[in-house]
Image 1 (cartoon, one colour):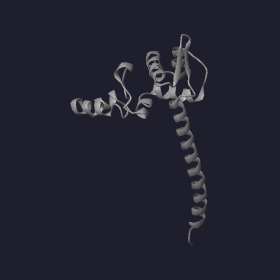
Image 2 (cartoon, helix red, strand yellow):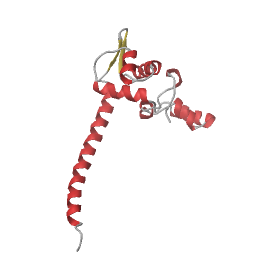
Image 3 (cartoon, one colour):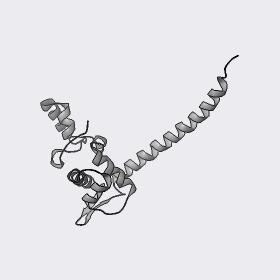
Length: 145
């Protein structure tokens, strides 16, 4: 299930607004509270357009119009523009009259880069450990006969 919110409907959950989020949860339920006060990662993974734009922000530095991003990513132009505006508000992209440009210095982009590198390192380590263990295991389990 994707998180569907408009720019005006959300406020990232922080220690400063935690009490408001829990008050909303008491009044309208946890689901509505999480939509109104998403955590950072929940917000960044809320829909395919936002996820793909975050991935672009970690790889590209060129400036493009929202329509160009929509075409390149094969997403609805309105959804991409809303996601870009939200990512601008978070500092992950810069906006000017010509279009949008990823901000490689943003906390969001640097955090995604670090997380991606950590996952890659862990995967490579697990693969290397698995390859070694697999070889030993296959030698140890020769059929008796």
